[in-house]
Image (cartoon, rainbow, N blue to C red; front, side, top):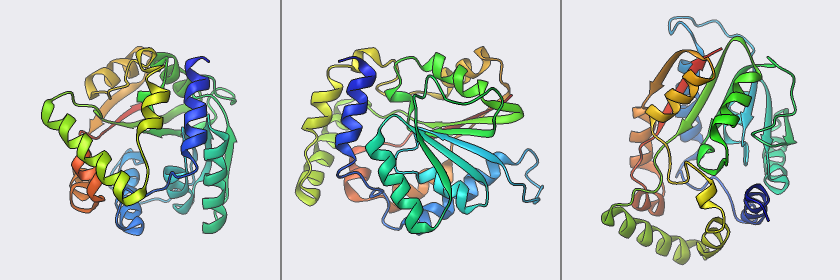
Length: 254
């Protein structure tokens, strides 16, 4: 089984129990993300014009970002390698009465014509991509001239002993409170992690370099301080213990 098949199988399995349980209040979390996304998509932060954009969320999962953009009034599509995760995203959209075009697809080989979307975004996806340079080139390809590529990522597996202990404690809390073990994650990803260049996470410098390599302009990084502060204060206990957030958003213009 190759890397992508293994990754697809894991997320198909994980969809059975996966939910947006990181935040104590989903409503408050969405609002703070809306603010951050609105700031990012406005070329001029003083511009309050509401413009309907064509948005693609790559690696959409349960549709967290896609549904936020849809709530903001944009036309949204979401792509994911896991068909079972897409079932959850469609169910979430139905419950919220939002129209999002969720479809099965490969983040490294998108099923769209060149320059289709004003905004292409992904969150916490780079770590599970076998060919990140290829993927970023593909995401840039489908962005319109003058549009933006937005990548949200961070460093997930700090190898320091203190963080290894914190992750262990976090797993124990998840097991006790959610009756869910991390063994399945380990068994799947142990087979392919050496094929994933950013398995441990990424830093802004590496992402900026890749954005520059595909010819994006006005590349910048937002450390998402408000979101990090919110997560430190409002994330569930297991998440706060196991993570030392290094969240950032890289932006580049086509």
